[in-house]
Length: 245
Image 1 (tube, rainbow, N blue to C red):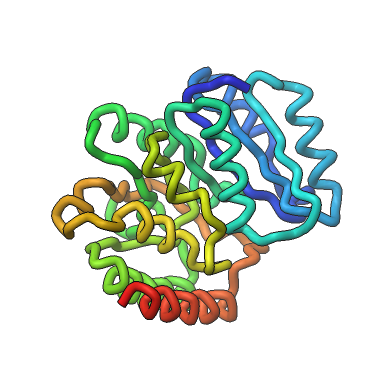
Image 2: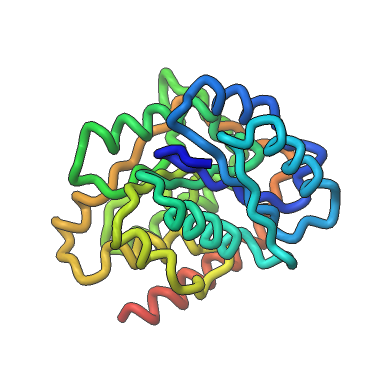
């Protein structure tokens, strides 16, 4: 696959709910975008499903297999480094369940294209008039608590670090941010932002990032992220805060 924009899609046991047709349709309609699926040691037929997709559109779909389940953080990191190694111009990651619709990629791409100083576009789940953002109340309020803590740790007025839709400009700073394994399994998004802003004053750091309010986002049933995982992420966030003091 040799497309300027590569979206990494981490997958663990997604055989039953992966909407392969949606990915294929988007890739065929947007020749600048390709998808790199990372099979994170799935124990179902995910690997077979992904190989079937790749065989249908090898120019748009690539598959990276991991021998054992290492978690979303490591799957994303491996995929991003593989995409950067192949020479893409922009790299991002997207949740396999399509809680964020694929058509948002186009808007993220346009933000990077029109704003050369911006390094990363972050999906932002804001429930507002004119948007269709559906999120369970428990996850919403836990998310707000987490986001407040993340903002304090990062010293950035970020609203939503944990949305699984992000796009980065491919440059040295981004490569360095993904080179070392993440200390956190569930708060790795915060680690990425912390690494990108490291060594910069607050004003310059803020200029690197753009939060794009999503037009649609749906809390898909079967998500692997529950309240327990959010609490673990909060503990990870505390450890990250301690390491940066």
